[in-house]
Length: 479
Image 1 (cartoon, rainbow, N blue to C red):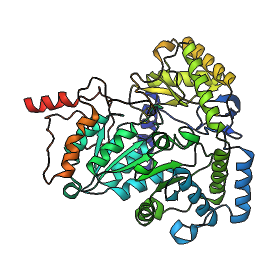
Image 2: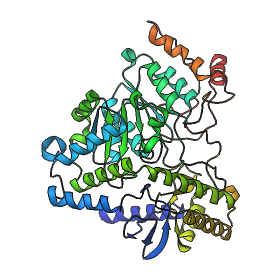
Image 3: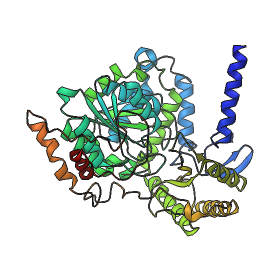
Image 4: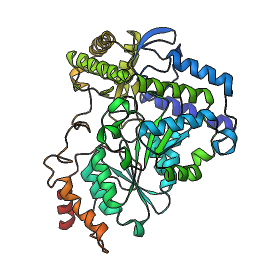
């Protein structure tokens, strides 16, 4: 009887998800992750794969994985600290450390495990984590599981991060450890964190910095070395997290940092200690892909060219899309059901762009997440844009109301004079109290507004207007 009752409740919940346009199912892709695949037996142009450089099915990568299976076997057989560390793991860690410009590297089983492990090792009960509100779910879950106080700051808002760190950070010896964690390129919006400002703030407050470069490795920066390399900040952060499952065409993840930091993670990151080591074929395939990236960086340029072509083509069809080289292009529809209808109808016309809905993105911002690959052609991009536009119009949707999120700031590599134009004092001036706090034995206490401008100690994500520190301070003084 109990089982029947539980099954009925589950069926009711599934029906509710379908009614809300939030139901999900697995789609079957036949063959490798190329620009065109068979989806449930139907040929479609693939526009939602993270195989950004087209290396997942490259002959050298396939051969390396097959050879590794013959040499080391399919599985590692144990965790890294037992008997699961093999020669191929050490080789890739050395190459990734050199690629990232850091002393050492540690492989994890997945990006999710890496983020859980690093955050949990860097912060715990009595500590504080400052997290961008649009960080990946693995970061959000890592923050929750760490048992630290989690302060969510507004997306890419350095002024609000400063305000939050003044209010919740303080001096490390009095308030425990502090950690600032952010994606470098955000997976659903395709924009870039203000890394230089984040690093400056963290250094001023004595906080550690962790940056997830999952969507930047192989796609951005000099020779595809990521957003931190683009900003010249590789050596300024405590942990660089990257993935083997996107541009490197395989599966797994890594963390790069100073030698002492990596030894610390090896001893304290629970998701590393208690997980079976990544499989030798996956590691060997990623090693071959990394070699290809270093030997032939033109793939990064090819990806950027395809991203420009996709964005130009979408704009020509009337979509609200900015002309830049970011390979992730969100087409925000808004309503969950409309987004799902557009996804299904486009598939019928031969274009597969997955519908992304809550809880992956905030309610009311459901979208098609388009991803260019280096293996696409400019013709593929024009075809996709035309199909998406015609399909939207047939469904009664206006392409002019669909596009990238409004108010997207300039990318990190563009000059940034202030965290928010017109928000009052510049960031350099605003940092001065934090610098003074580090240099003096007393605290310069930040004002305490009666109602904080963003969620402070919850993991909930919420869209808000740009933060204005002077306005909030004035409210606090008036209170």
